[in-house]
Length: 385
Image (cartoon, rainbow, N blue to C red; front, side):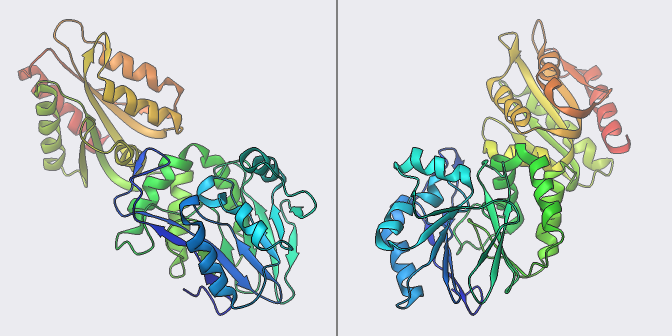
């Protein structure tokens, strides 16, 4: 696949993977992207997962068409991108390995060598002259590892963006970009919004016509759409107006309360109501939804003087990723000593800029008339507040 007349795609698709990074379900596989610039000098961008060494080297050799690489640029050291650096270095023994200096320490840790004598450490703003074009490096620390660099091809106006602007799914997956890119971003990069904002600021002065990420499709059309979403996600802004409800229920009474609330919200004109059963829904999808909407409701039972385990896990995910700038409401259930609301709000104390609803719901085993009124008042507050 051609990115431009002199930039070729040499990545691979993994259709056998079940869990990316050991936790994210990827029903449509995963792409490990790699690229090669065939300028006056030849620069290769990143390798791929260890299981695809031979396929990747074959793709590279075919694209080279008899030429020899001058450089391997290492954007990011996670093994799904760096696993075949050693194989590349053995095959192309005159090629220089280019990376941010911390990456060479990681290479020594991962692979037993930092390629001393044939490595080139680059910093923010450094350039690499390929003869017919100049590459400019942009450091992107903690997006989402400390050694990450992006590279801008000044000739073709291409940004090689490392993991930024990536998504779950093979390049052949016929699916909405935003859904799987959002799940990828929130799950993997989400904690580092401030760092992403800093990189976006640095990139704002660049004329970018193409984005080449390390996962997912090459982006060429309507780049403002993708950049705007990244700006919303990394600034913890609200992407979609609506209310998202997350619940756990043991005997169905908390679920019933959630169903009543969802109906009340819709009848009162809420633009979008989403309901997630934390015991049955994909946890990464739920976390994605929490960051997407501006108002969330947490509904759960008291369990061992705490909260139900799936709710505790969910809130831990939110806190870990720096959840902020949202309105939160609570529905709790307990048969003799309900404490769920107190526990959940205490867990969220580490999150910044949260506001809490005034009309929370306390159920004592089963819904009564008072609970019905509480739910109506909560719905009215969430729609009109």
